Amino acid sequence: MAEEPEVETGAVEAQDVQPMSPGAKLRAAREVQGLSIQDVATRTRIAQRQLEAVERDDYAALPGIPYAVGFARAYARTVGVDEVMIAAEVRNGVHGSDLGANRYEAFEPVDPARVPSRALAWTAAVIVILLVAGFMVWRTQMFTPPTGEEIAAQEEAKPAAARPAGAARAAPVAQTVVFTAVDDVWLRITDEAGERLKDGIMKKGENFTLPANARNPMIVTGRPQALSVTVGGKPIPPLGAADRTISDVPVSAEALLARGAAAGAAVPAPGQPTGGAPVPAPAQPAPAVPQTSAAAAN
Image (cartoon, rainbow, N blue to C red; front, side, top):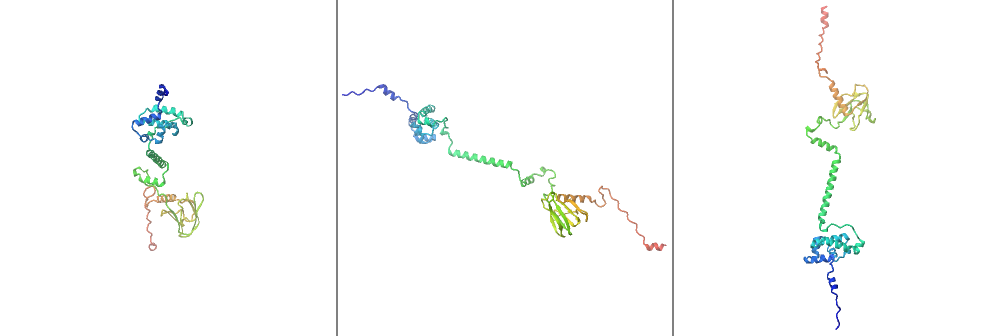
């Protein structure tokens, strides 16, 4: 009878005490807790195929060293294994693999279990967009000068006490100046740049309206009395003495209104001079003596 070869006891004990790999430790801890690989994937938010690669110690199937270490730590935390020990063992295993030789990276990703969900990320993105849009609208409102209509509306909205003194007595924005020929008359109206606004003979009954945008217009004519001038429908005194040539007389609405006001103030009231002292009544002439009576006395 052949003798069976003796097996060295020390060799068997050495095989039995070989340390488990990081993946084997994680798989054993998962099975002890009665968890499936899908249960761990749900809790860690890591794809099941990547967790299976961690259990097989197949680090080349993972995106990189940081992901291998990060996935192993999250797996260990879920099944109650020391994550620091698992991370160290995974690093040692990765550096000896093809992944460690070709794709070394110096950082580790954030724990995938703590990464916000996609819905939360989209909500944050929408909030950021709304904040940026609101800031742009506010910046546009703050740095855009108000229009004339907005300024007028603001002034109208102010109470009377808050308005500057004299604002209630402000003159109209513009008043129309109209020249009407009461007889045939030659005239020339120019602006401050020398541009002729009206030049020639106006026939009796003809009208000319001064352009609203005319700057400092002036008139030249030899017969001022042949022109009737109105500002906003209000008649203005004659521009000069009859048949006397006038030259470079301002005819803007403001100048003509001032001329009319000055002419009205220069005319004193009956019996009242400009100084305010009463004017004595003129002496009544003595009644004339009829010639017939004088002759009869002689």
